[in-house]
Image (cartoon, rainbow over all chains, first blue to last red; front, side, top):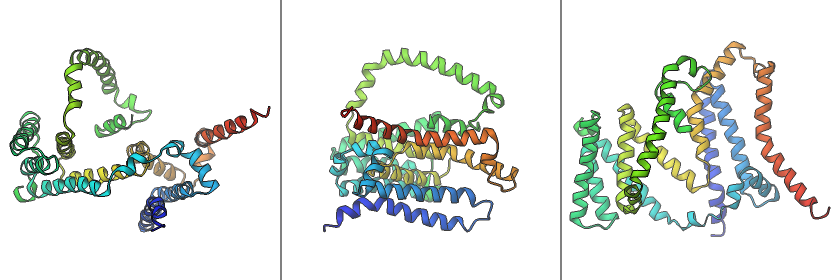
Length: 161
Length: 173
């Protein structure tokens, strides 16, 4: 249990380091001329990740690195971010991910009122009538703006395309 | 600035010294439009200040789905490509993670906007020099530019160190 704060502190740069290493490995698959820029970006990112790791350590060098390289972060308390619960964050991301999936499958015209109605009813705790009215009026406005006025055909989805 | 540079690229104009020569009409049109927009924005802003302030009173539980919908429709409408919707979701998550984990977002935006130009110029330089890296420091202009980059990176650290040293010496002297 006591290692949890350490894991939380070092996890972001370590995850970024893993992504960067994969990126560098992929870059070596390119032709010699094409791999220069990705490799420069990759190795520069690794150097920055190393600095990030150093600045997160509780050592003297870490505190100096944090003070000189990212003073705004050194001053931040992080209390507001910590106050957000993981469950709430995942719920918020889940709603957007579900809407994106719905858009890809059934298109904007069906997904927009559905998402609006369900979000307002379940997440927003609004009444049935208010949710339904908003779920009709707002997507109608989007449809008029994009399809009628701007003449863009908004995405119909994999099922109705 | 990053958004503006992104818009220029979106409309086929590559930001840089040649932009004024290659797109003279568009640039002067832009200047005139910006002047007119500034005047109009002032007038409209003064007239609409009260009703616009009411937007801040709209419940967040209504605003969130509206903003999400407009963002995704806008992302799709740019190229009418459904893949852009997924990319928008991915970058939205990345942006949120960056906010949550205290990483700066502006630097990433600038890198994404200017990355293509930098990569093309790098390849042009390498082709001209036949793979010789000394082209980046061999000429006077290039050497001065590299020196300026190093100075701009080192200056904030050097300044902070100098101020700290001065503060430490201050009470004693």
